[in-house]
Image (cartoon, rainbow, N blue to C red; front, side, top):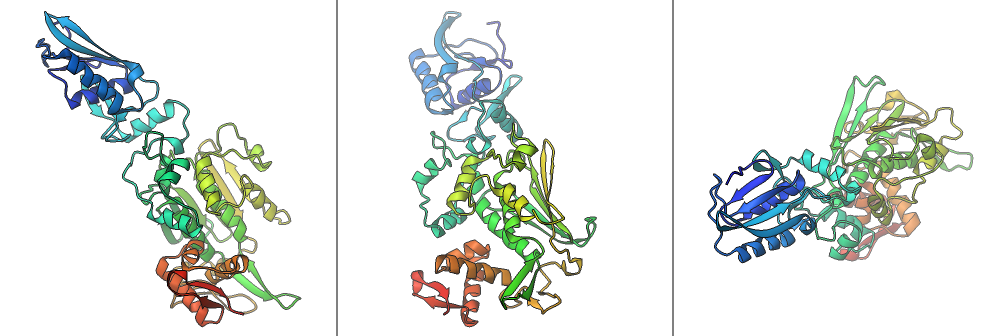
Amino acid sequence: MELAEDEHTEFKRAWSDSAKRSIVAFANTDGGTIYIGVDDDGTVIGVKDPDQCMRQATQAAANAILPDILNFISVSTNHMEGLPVVVVQVRRGTHPPYYLADKGPRPAGVYIRSGAASIPATETAILDMLRQSAPVAYEDMPSFQQQLTFIATKAFFDASGIPFGEHQHQSLGLLTPDGVYTNLALLLSDQCMASIKVAAFADIGKEAFQSRSEITGPLPQQFEQVRSLLSQYNHVRSAVGPDMRRVDEYDFPPDVLREALLNLIIHRDYGISAPSLISVLPDHIEFVNLGGLPTGLTKQDMLNGISVQRNPKLTSIFYRLRLVEAYGTGIRRITHAYAHMSAKPVFSITDHTFNLSIPALAPNPSTKEDPAISTRVQDSHSPTKRIDSHSGHTDEHESLIRKYVRDHGVVTRAEAQQITGMSQAAAARLLRAMVEKGRLRRVGNGPSTAYRIKE
């Protein structure tokens, strides 16, 4: 036999699992042919039962490889040097990456052809295949990681009274029709690799760090933790208004920071592995996202209120969890909040980045301490307690709890944990402290324990 193994040719003495890897590699690269019944040196030895060998090859292609590859292979029996040889011809597939079903779309399951060998593809190569195949959104692509858990995200769904079982995994888009976890599932999982870096600076030149944090975990949890962190940097000054009511003035409108953070999370291009960045400076806060605007959307379109969802299923989940109030209104909310201000939010957009700069309403550089060490904020009227040195919670945390109870009538520990971004123990301490201060009263016992405004 004159053939030799190369990038398009593979020899197998008999059918084995390694032949499945070769099928995957050929389908992901430029196609090729597997000769079963031929030794590595090209010696034809034949197969004892060609029909059984053909069935093994066909069944492997049908059951052990995803996506469906049957349209791209043909299996036949030829006679070479008088001996039966099974020939498996594989064409390049149109929906790579193809992968071993029991390994998933990761290097252990995705193979490519390199010379005469079938080798594992790198994660970068797999991502390139996904992008170059059918126009599938990142959140719908199969995840590299298939060993996923959803403990934290399920707590958010439970607190909102929304089921989060296997049926919802399918209907929300966490699973492909083949039962493989998608990238959306990865973003909601405890194994989520995306992160947000938050840094505070003492100067506008970003030369003197005050603190740095990298927030990880499932995206709903990241939202609550970063929101809580930003609230600590958002100094509040209290005064008594003409109607003898307390008036709180913030450095930054809390609703604007919330919308900017939501925009950072739900519109991010998660196909880019670098973290999102938030920089807190004395006179503004910068939100830097990766990926620019979605294809076809211009800056003017965005400012005019036109919204194109880069991650529509992720956005829908945030809406279900009541983290997003309405679709496509975030930018308008941000610009409207500054409509009568001399300083305006600044949008700087390139092909690969989206930078939003939120100016302070009343910059006060002298009070921009690190929230990890600062315990109070001074103003011209009276000192306002910022972080309780015993419980670790802030006035902003209490304010969020009071607002939630006013809006909903009651709050549970789980709900307090969700809306403040605090840990379970910290949320419980906060509620106990508010009861001790006479601001809340406890009702019920055990799992039915809740808290109401004390009359």
